Each structure stands twice: as C-alpha cells, then as structure tokens.
Image 1: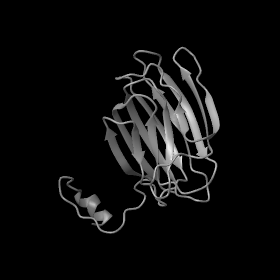
Image 2 (image 1 turned 180 degrees about the horizontal axis):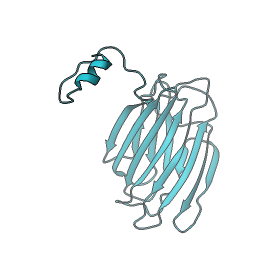
Image 3 (image 1 turned 180 degrees about the vertical axis):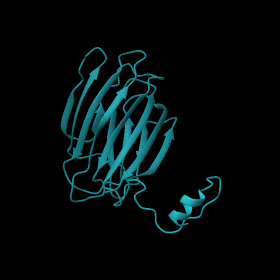
Image 4 (image 1 turned 30 degrees about the vertical axis):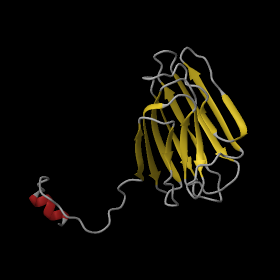
Length: 195
C-alpha cells in the first residue's frame, strides 16, 4: 500500500496484514536463549555462533545457601571444560560500606562473586554481563558485568567483575555455577548483539 494511500484512507489496525520483502533496521539485538531452573547448581548457554561477536547475558539466581558464583566456558565442540590460565578481577561493596575486592590469574574458572553475603532461600541475586569473542579464534573470550545480591539475613552486595582466557580459541558458550547449596529458582536470558 502506497504511503499516499495510507495518508488518505487511514489504516484499521484490527485488520490482518501480509508483508513481503525484508525488514531492516528493526533492532540490533536478538534473543538467542532463554531458560529457567528450579534445581541443580548451573545455568548453561551453548549456542554461541559466528553470527554474533558479542552477547548480552541477564541472569537471576535464588540460591539455597551462602556461596559464590563462577563462570566456565564451553569449548568449540560444546563440551564444558575447566579454563586454563583464566584471569579475573572483581570489586564490590557490601551494605554499610564494606568492600569485597578480589582477583586472581592462572585460574580454572572466573569468579563473579566470591561469596553472596547471607545468601539463603529468598535472597535473590541478579546480574548482567557481556560475553565477547566466543567463536573468534583470533581474540580472547572475555566477560565483564555487574551483579546485585539482595540481603534478608545479611547485607546486600553489588559488584563489578571481568575475566578472560589468556589464550584465543573458540568457545561455544559458558556455564554459571553456584559454589554452595542448590538453585531454588533461576533464569538465564542471552541476547546476540549485531555488528
């Protein structure tokens, strides 16, 4: 329908429309993974492709016990593997001003949070990070992001974190893992960012 016809006759949005051709410029992010969990200790994403250089990851976890949160990468075949020579840094603030920095090099995983203060059932924590260069064998796979942990039996915490592999290789995805207790409820959403 020509634009001049639309202007002169208007459009009834209750009608059904059929579109042909290609839609462009509709957005630069695509939801590529969405999952939930009510048990276990991990949230996994194994769908990285060369279509996206960067992924935006959103997560929320309600753990059953106080503990930390780590990330490991999947190899190019989609097999979970301990990292070799992974570096990470984290810095956080507890309610009341206590600081919780940490960093290590040459590790087998990336620590997002060393401990979730007072975490127990009902103390949800949420976070986001960028997962970069996973299927690019010429650049290092890395993450960096933010996390906030609620506190009902202890102080709430927030922190920033980042980590990378020291060697460039293809990584099909990642695994978020709590280090104590079990997941009572959780979600994971992964968006591929174009460009």
